[in-house]
Amino acid sequence: MNSQTAQLDDLRLVALPSAIKCTELFVRFSLTEWSLRELYDEAADVARQLVGAVVERTDKSSPGFVTVRLRLSGNCLVVEVEDDQLDHIHDEAPVIEGRPTGAVPLDGRGKLVWCEVPLPDGVTAAQVRLPRRDERRAQVVPEPAPGDEKATPDPGVVDRILVSLQNREW
Image (cartoon, rainbow, N blue to C red; front, side, top):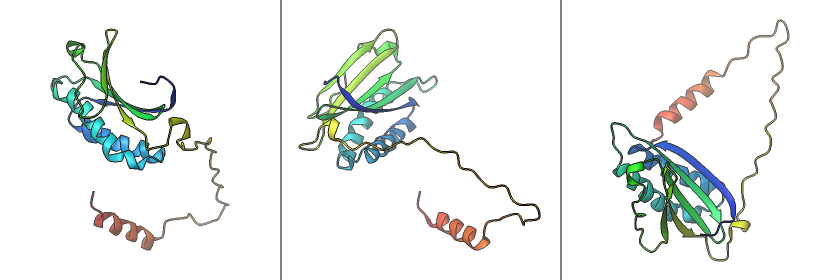
């Protein structure tokens, strides 16, 4: 594992079955932001397997937490999953076919499991185009002048939005 990280994103979830789908959405969102859509399927599959292994051995009556972390490092995307299951601290990392994985116990806090997914040919972490995050300026909404009518949304626009939302498959 290359220790120089160019970008990092993480998400903390309750270790229940819903965490697997949330993990997939998180991976897809992060890779979209990093312009690495070609890694969607592979990275989402790796993350699902790692989180699924934690969820599988979680006591559903008192689930702990799982943190999913994506790191761009060297020539790969590192998918890391950190859990707080002390009784599984020395378990091996799940085997993910064709991918290097590892597990490291965390001092009394659980375990960190990782898997490397290579970046596309010729791309390094330093070359990945990262999103620009400018400071948000507070939007100033002008005060209505005395005697002005209160602005309301156009009912036709609202109807079109509602119809569009009803027709959409979630």
